Figure (tube, rainbow, N blue to C red):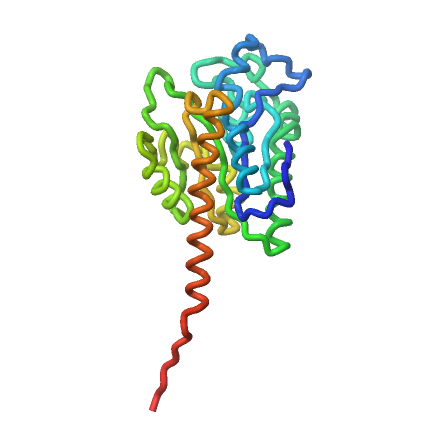
Length: 259
C-alpha cells in the first residue's frame, strides 16, 4: 500500500483499492497470460490516475493498494467467497484454485491487512488531530460485462447515508451529456462497499464510492477531465457545508420567557 500527501489539508480522504495490477514474483502470473494482467480483472484501469489527480487538486491524502486484486481483493471482507477469486468475470485464475488456510493467510498478509491497517491509521491520526474526514473511493468499471452493455458514464455507490452521495449525484447530473447511475453499475448489495462499511460507517464519516466507466479515462487528458469534474463538485459540497455551518453559528440564540 502507499499513502501520498499524508499532511493534505482537505477534509476529503481519497482511496483507491484497485489501483495496481502488480503481482509479486512469488505468484508469477497466477497461471494467466500476460495480456490478462492488463484487463479489468486485474485492477481498475484509469482509477489511480484519476484518484491521484483529484487528490492533487484538492490537497487531499490518497491511500492506495499496490497489489493486483487477482492476488486478493482489498475491497472484500476476509470471509467473502471472492476475496481470492478462482474465477473473475468469466476467466478462471489457476493460481487461485484450491488454496489452503496458510496460503490464504499469506495473501491477506501480503496486501489486505497492510492496506486496511494503513487506512485505519490515517483516519485515526486525522481524527485525533481534529481533522474532519470525508472518504471518497475511486473505481472504474467495464463498458460491457458478461455481454451486457453499461450505459452509465459514472456511478455513485452509497447506502442509506446520502449526505455526500446525494450532492455528488446532483452535481454530476448537471453536466450535459453525462449518464449518471445511482447505485449503478453496482450497489452495496453486491458486496463492493466493504472499505467504506469498515472504515467510514462505524465512525459516522460521510462517504461515497465513485465508479467511472473505464473507456472514459483511457489517457491523461480524459483522466484529468474527470478529476477536475469531481474536484469541482466536491469542493462545492465542502463550501456549501462550511457556509451552512457559519450561517447556523450566526443565528441568534432565542429563548423562551415564562411569566
